Length: 279
Ligand code: MN
Image: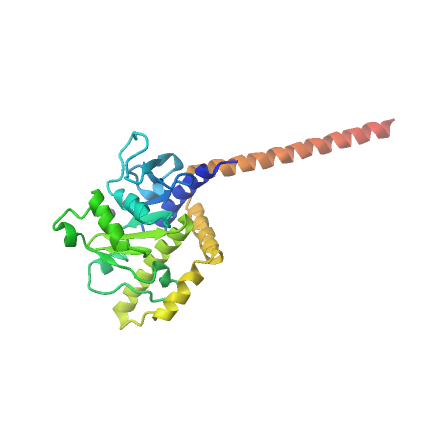
C-alpha cells in the first residue's frame, strides 16, 4: 500500500503526461499540485518535458517557490506562476501553465475566448487576459519574478483560467483531476472556436447556459469517465509513468503466485486423496 503523498506524486506525473499526450503541453509548460499534507508547499517537477515526468522528478517548493531541499538538477524558470496562485487562492489545489497552440491565437488576436460547445464552460464563467506590458513594460515575456507571478494571480482573481498575452495560459483546479479536465476541455473549446471562426460568425453559449453547464460537467461521473479515457489512451501509447508499470508488474506477480499456490494446494489434495484411496 502506498501513502497519500506517493499517490499524489504518481497522479501528478500522470497528469503531466496526460495533458502532454492530449496535445496541450509540448516540450514546455508544467503542472503542479499542492502538497497533500502541507498547504504551505506544492509539488512540481524538475525542469523536464511534461510527457517524460516520473514521480522521482518531483520536487517540493514553498509557496515562495523556493525548493525545500536544494535540487540536484535545473528547476523551471516560471514556477512563481504556481506559488503565487497557491498564495492567493487557498481553494486551488492544482495549477497548469501551458502554451497551447489552439489557445494562443486568443492571446494574440482581439477575439474573445468564449465557450462554444457544452464542455466549454469548464474554462470558467470569465477568462481574463493578463498582459505583462500593463505593469512591467517590455520584458522577455517569461513570468519569473515574484511580482510578475503576483500580478498574474491578481488577474486570475476568482476565475479558473487566465490568458497571457503573446505567451499562453494558466489554469487552476480544486483538485488535480478537475484541473486536467478544465485544461484539456478549454483547449478543445479553443480548437472548436477557431474552426467555427474560420467558417462563419460564431454563436457562443449564453450566460445561463454557461452557468448551468460548468457544474454539470465538473461532476464526479464525467470527470472519472474522462480520466479513465485519457489514462487508457496513454497506456496504449506506452506512456504511463514508470511507477505504474512497476505496480502492475507487482500485481501480476502477486496474481501469479496466488495461482501457483492454489495449483500446489490442488496437487496436494489430489495426492492426499490418492493416498487415502490406496489405503
Ligand atoms: Mn510560459
